[in-house]
Length: 217
Image 1 (cartoon, rainbow, N blue to C red):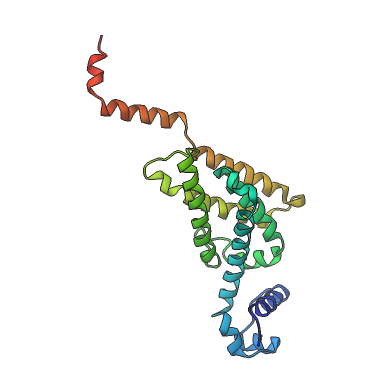
Image 2: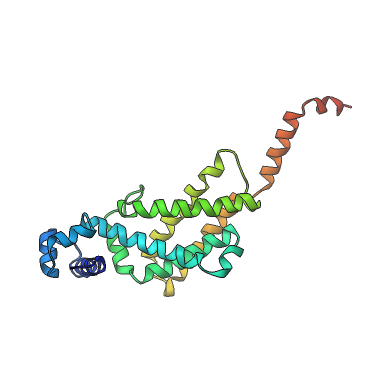
């Protein structure tokens, strides 16, 4: 009986050699010399294979990071930076396949279908990191906006992946720079700023309006 790994490997080899999906599941399994029922035991379609591979790469990155002893000592900013640096390293192993899966959606602003499963996993990961930052006081807890922090990080995810697949610099050093600058700017916006202090002061004055009467000269 075929294994999921055998099917995934066979599919990746096929699309990277032919730059297109097999014409049908029937022709694909015939080439692999497995039964069609074996394919459907693990996957519903060729698209589901691509989604599973993306999910596995993402889960592998997160699991590896969280198993490190130093992980719990990282700030929220450091955790997200570590994720993206590590993620790019993991994606490098399958760069040609990653580019193949995204090429059909290169002009879309919405999340590519192949990343649907990844978005759910990343959102959950990012939300946990953000909540830790909010609890520690590292990040500013702003009404309404705090819930959108993970959305800002997903935009960074999409930007960094897109940047990386077109990066032609040695060792993808430009991608490392994009990660550093993008995440640091994003977290600067997440953290407390003079504007937050001004807003808090305004709220205080609004709640304690009677004090203003005593301050008149």
